[in-house]
Image (cartoon, rainbow, N blue to C red):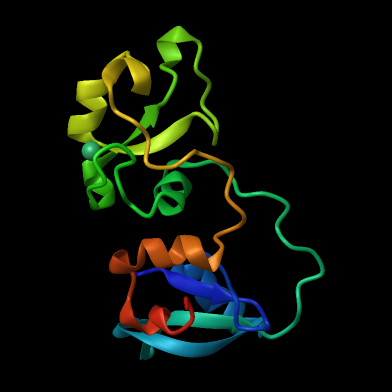
Amino acid sequence: MRDTLLLDQGYQPLKVIAWQRAVVLHLVGKVELLSAHTWEIRTVANAFPAPSVVRLTRSLRHRQPFVRFSRENVYLRDGYQCQYCGKHCAGTELTLDHVQPSSRGGGTSWRNVVTACVRCNRDKGRLTPAEASMPLRSVPRRPKWLAPKILRVGAQQMPESWQIFLH
Ligand SMILES: [Zn+2]
């Protein structure tokens, strides 16, 4: 994990951003550095620790209105856990599964897409959970923007320096 956890002014987790973006935000004074990764960023002139946790120095005027639908955000919402067998996996071992198969009209949306391991996705095939006798572990919904609860579920994927901000 080389990304950076972004906190709001009140130390609440907002989202995970690329470390490059965190460096830029820091350079322009929008965030302060709270914790660093163990690896360093090297430039021609010098080296400095990569940001692990940063905090906005000003309060946000508006919260993000909604979470962008993406593969990573579905995995995050589901805590990197297969929603059928419950296995925790790395992102590379996971797939997105259409609850109502797309070949039968199921849309690609927060309410119809869940995290599934390769095996469960293959076993389920073009069936619904009921037809495949593979009940879902949770009802898929649009998440609030990376609420602390969501981050906590995926905690095994996260650097130690993030932990204290996620509880
Ligand atoms: Zn599974």
